[in-house]
Image (cartoon, rainbow, N blue to C red; front, side, top):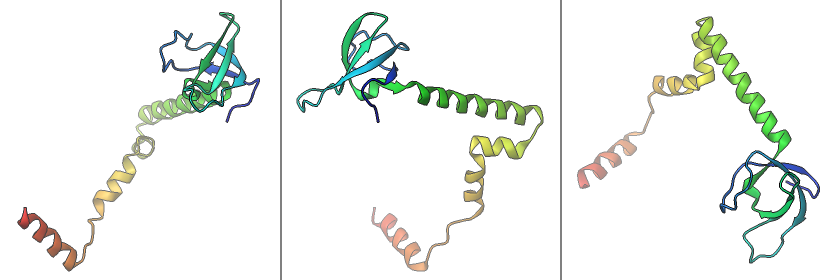
Length: 124
């Protein structure tokens, strides 16, 4: 997923190393040692240090920007649905439409399946 020299953003601090969250850094080496918990060496220009990090602690800047754009557009659509009282759009955005369809169709089960369930409950 990552390449050497890529600019990444620190999003977590799994090993509590005192990483500056939200700051960017550059991947300068990959740690391929199977005995090491860390997978990358990160150069952080702001604090002028090299720090070993795990892959879960870093993310690409483009990926974070895309996630933020999706979140903002989803919130804007929700605001629009509430302002215009568009119930269908609101249900679609909240994922409530799928649950409603599942409740409308009762599950059809065979007679053997029904008897098996009754026998299991009677056994308990």
